Each structure stands twice: as structure tokens, then as C-alpha cells.
Length: 282
Ligand code: ZN
Image (cartoon, rainbow, N blue to C red; front, top):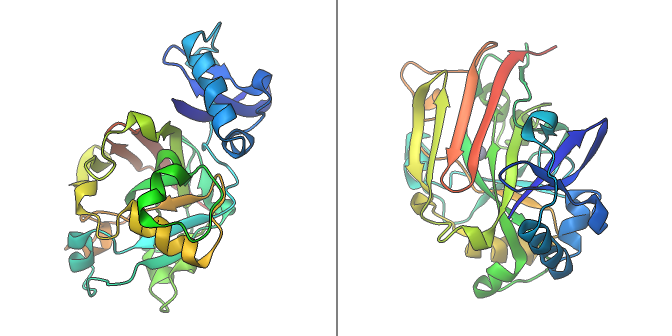
């Protein structure tokens, strides 16, 4: 089950990517992905019926795929969560998760342009594997994580290093408009065998600059669900981006930063491919 947000005929709605096209979930009473996730098991049952007999799906050529959750209740990011990336960044390997946020102004979908802001000379790429909450919960024990996670998506944690590292707080460098490409879909967890054994890679203009595995995660999904839900009630549609593997631009010699005209592709095994161009921002 691949949950998408799509625009067709001037309206933006929730759908299922059924392979040959997109099946609208509106007739089931789910106008958007958040309403689908909030409905829990009833929505999943309905989606399985649609998958079994999708009728006349809208051809991919007639729809624009948007970010699966254009306005997430929370957009949480984990820093320094791959062992090798922590080392290349010259930072201590953490014993507590580093947590920062993006806001919904950052969210864009597949194919949408990342705007390189003129105020930053150090806009970097970060391929990330993200999980999406499917059930409200607080104080969730690690061993119950699967009950609360609906599925997985790809996030590009675009990062203006000069803003990020100007102080100890990273958020300001992470949440420029368009700095949160997401998608193309949310893949239900049942379709992914082991989320901690997925290849993750990033190509910039056809050159592979990150290529790792979610095996390298320091804090894994069960620990993150427990840790975050100790502090805050997790809600359907909350997104947790789990951090980036080695190979980011600012750690290279010489460094590589993104510029207008570039194209970035992130791939996560079983989850899909997220492709975005870069343009000059205002
Ligand atoms: Zn990141």
C-alpha cells in the first residue's frame, strides 16, 4: 500500500498508487492523507478493498504527485544518527538522540524545486529515511513501536550549513522554504521487511555522493518512538526523519554545495525515489 497526495483537475486529495495509476480515496471518505491516517484500521481495510479492485485509476501522466503530508502535525528530524556520518562531521557519537525540527513551510513534493536562498553559500544535501506515525500515543514502550508506525517515506533534509552551525541550535538552517522535499509516497510498513536493513543513496547531477544502509542507524525506530513519546504525544501524520548517512557535501574536501540547476535524487530500497531540481531562491 502506497499512500499519496495528488493534484488532479485543480483539487488536491489522497490516493493510493496502484501501479497503473492513482486511485482516489475521496469516495471512501478520506479527502486527505491525514484523515486517512487518523481513521486507523478502518481506513486500511478500505484501502485494501481499493487495491483489490481499483476500478479506473487516474493515469500517472494526469496527476501531479505532491508531498504525501503537505502539512504534517510535526516534522521531527534526528541528527547525527549514522555512525559514520557522526564521525565525518567531527562530532562525538551521541548517547542521546539529537532532535531538531522543520516546519511545514519547508515541505515540497517530488519534482518541486529546492530554492537555493541567496543568503546562504552552503546549501547541502542529506538523504534520509523517515517513518510516519499512524496512531496517537504517549509513553510508547519500544516493543510496541510497530503499532504506532504506519509506514515509511523519503525526506531530503536540505541544510544551509552556515545558518545551521552559526549557533548550537540547528533548526534555523534546516527550515528555509522548500528545504523539506518529501515522498513520493508513504509505503505501509507491512511491505517493508526490516526497516533497519535498507539501502539508501543520493545522486547529485548523476554522481553518487551518499550510499549506505539503514543498518548504520545509531538510534533505531523503536528507541526513537519511545524517546520522543516520552516527551510529546505522537499523532497520526507526524513525520520522523531518521538522519543522514556519510557523504554530505560540507564534510568533503573540497566541499560540495548545491546550486541552481542541480538535480538531486534520493533512493531508499523498497520506499522509492525522490527527485528534485534546484533553482535560485528569492
Ligand atoms: Zn538530517
